[in-house]
Length: 403
Image: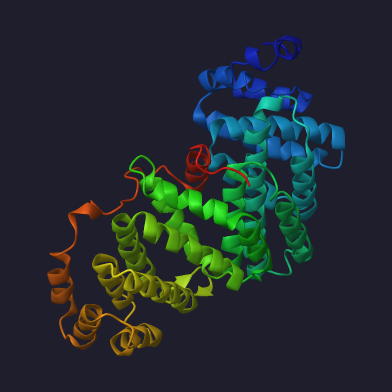
């Protein structure tokens, strides 16, 4: 096909990777509807190469606002339509390998977050994918800077700028965007960054996001993916400050009252997974575990006050999963000695504390668990649900509403 005919027909006329790259070079804007033809006409590997080619052209044009706008809008439409984490990874790889990566990252972030999309009804899809891309850039830049500060000299300024720009969009009425921000600032805290921005995000919409996640965690249709996101991200939220922990404690308390049987299953599964972790990225896993144990202590007090046998026993069993920690042993000891604890719960804690065969004791208590609890929540059986997939699924469920 000649260059003239490709330009004339646009994206709906392409039949090869070369023609798609030609349209990128020419600056022909891609529409959401065009993607239907592209996915039929080009292989998955060709589509990845389109993203790679777009990154190459961006490296040449990022100083030209108009040329960059057309390219960035087309790129966002392309990736948002696919919801493909590999495409994001390939694009960020190419940017990170460019000699002008710092300027490119800053230019892309500034442009993508302020871009006026041609297709208004696809604005939220493209905006949330831009947040996902910028988040990945920030994470890669942080790790690269830690490994080789000289190679990425000046990266700390760009990282601070990215954090500021991402936090500035926390008012966006987009569930996907809010989940991306929780994920990004949580991981940055896990990488050892100050938790200031994470605290602000938690104060801004932490309650709304956590409430929606737990609501989905106790729904059979969404529990597998919600559990994945919770297990991957809540450990980072345990690094947040006092206000963030107060918000989390309020969520835990609410669901303890609303769905005690199912909630006890969550405590069992999450505690088991967290207890096995030595680290949360570079953050000390012990700090995270101690914070979780404090939450378990508060939850036990609530279960004790309402005399809920199942919950109290399950919380004690969850605490026992952290018996290798001095604070875990101390918390169990407090339960046996505190005068306000009901005799039955003291007895359970005392037996577990002194038993030389805790596994057998766990099994004996398990026999008396309520059938109302149902089955334990499980992870999704498919390996294809990556972070981006989780966020899209949970964000589009309708449970997470902006506040």
